[in-house]
Amino acid sequence: MSTPPILYEDLSQLHEPIQPLIEEAFRKSIKKGQFILGEEVEAFEQKLSESTYRDYAIGLSSGTAALTLLLKAMKEQNDRRMVVLPAMVCMPVVAAVVEAGCEPIFVDVSFGRYTIDPDLADAAMNDKVLALIAVHLYGHVCELDRLKLLCERDGAYLLEDCAQAQGALWKGKPVGSFGDAAAFSFYPTKHLGALGDAGAAVTSNSEWAEYIKKAREYGSFTRGPYSFLTGNYRMDTIQAAILLAKWPYWMEWVEKRNTHARLYLDQLIEIGLELPKKVVEAKDAQHVFPVLSSNRNRLTQQLLELGIETAQHYSYVSALQPVFKGKFISKDYPVACKVANEQISLTCSAVHKQETIEKVIKHLKVILNFG
Image (cartoon, rainbow, N blue to C red):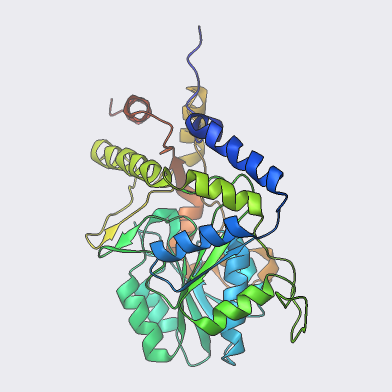
């Protein structure tokens, strides 16, 4: 009998214990006949706003939509158009900046944390910067105190991207509660995932909230009058119902992922891999456990031959994509380039037991001649 593979993620196994709750959420939505926005979306918005200490949460179609509409709302009160963001980031973040009619200004990330480098962000700030996006990549919390001071000094907004970090804390406070606003994604693989696309924006700025509520429905939530026109960014009722059903469980899943991360950190010291760094101010919410290896392709292939799946986040530098036609150069982003060439994501899925992670560690040590 062959050994079952160790999957990077297995959402069917994650959902199996709560499948009756998810199915019940489907049945209730179908019976009620409400499929766009509605009571379930409002109930979910209430939970999210309370968990982030915000006055407003607006359910949307995706995390990308949340970033886009927040930046557009900020532009309504400001004629600045530049946005500072990390060069190592998932491309939907960059797409949101461009879609909002802003100009991305990329800076490198800090080694070991892989979040935006505050010193480089400082150098990039000027009086034309509308916002700085603090992307909590991999579930690692950015240096929020420093970034907030930079924005306050230069009159820019601090926008948190919490897509990979829901449940993380900075000095005991949840991510999403520090900036002027924050965006969340509920893509299926996130800590709290829908069964499709969904996202939300949170803020305590009433004017931004009003704008986004209109903007998610073409420009008016009362079907007129229309003072501006946008697209369709509404959250589906059924996705909100599923998120409500999963709400009691997602923090438990985050804690399991963090436990796996601690095991990796304890057991993979000095075996030829570069491990992520932890900081005392942050309680990360490990979405990805990133290691760097100069022999990435060989190592991932050897693991795959042993039935161990890995992933890469990400194998590109956002600033160096063809869409920018050479405007940015690689020498300005040495850490991001190293990550793009060497990063491996080891599974920290909440469905795995400790012995599964120990098996991954054992095979890594053998492959790297430390076993």
